Length: 436
Ligand code: ATP
Image 1: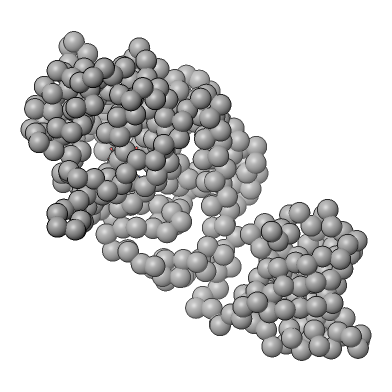
Image 2: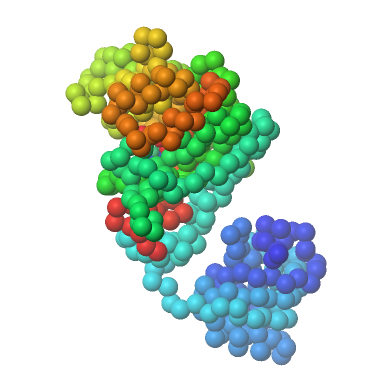
């Protein structure tokens, strides 16, 4: 594999081959400086014009455009005067591996560039240092959460995304042609995570796409997003689920802070705060009351028993003011507003929660109903019939009590950086965006 810019310090004084993009060409009177770039940084290549042996190299570079890619062999030498890492590459051979046409916009300065143009040329937009950093931060966050789960003996699984019944919530499901019948794209791995519990897998997780035919243009909804989903068995209550989520997010944010805290502050102006356990919790009714008393907010009739975007925003304010926390667990949602597989207690109280971070819901979690008869009853109440029959079978032959949650990965990254979901996803998918 090629040497990365941030590994070059190990090669000073040596003959190396370095490949990368041509970031800039500075053609001076006596010397040509070529700045080379990869996803980890920049390197200066210096070509002295007075030297006879360099004439061929100068001609190659004179015919090269910025953003072309090159493969250079030469001596990496120390030079304190060079701002980029105190080193420079003195080439003896340059090969152009791909020549770039003039770019449709300057990705180094995205001010005023239309977001749709940026999306049309997303691979160029991603060359922007800030956008490159977003990818690295997200990868770091996921790595840390994965590591935490592996250490706690979770097994990573991969559930199907093509499913036979529009079972979870018929309204926002994508239908696709499947030979001579219809299939649907999975809105979440919920049923299959629970199948793994019925199989006795005990602790599982999955990081995978979810598809939702939501025809909304908010800055936090996409039609395809990545969900960090997990499920585990033999819990006593949804408190166990919340506790695990606290540990998981603390593990993720600790690593992100360690590795990218400074950069996130510098580039996005956001502080990475590692939360303390336990995160504050509030019952929905108490929350409504506080939002009313403090901010004069009343939840609209149609949202009673649930939250809406405004309530989530104010909840962040409240969490900071009252608990000095960026997080807030909200519990006691109305069972009518929640899926049939969330457990209710003997009084009908829902055994689930949402987690709000920086004013946006990032997670839904719950203890699940694992008792076949109760589940059948709940499904009937919601008017679900044939479509969930296959799922109900999972609970007939012994299934441990269990619970779990789903964290929206795009939302995590979005809230860490303060960007919109369009700018955050590797490649956004929305009602008007299926290309590239
Ligand atoms: P919202 O109320 O914000 O639409 P939801 O209640 O439909 O979310 P869940 O079905 O509970 O969301 O999904 C679990 C998590 O998946 C959410 O907390 C969120 O982080 C993420 N998520 C859900 N829908 C979307 C979407 N359309 N785009 C991006 N992330 C999403």
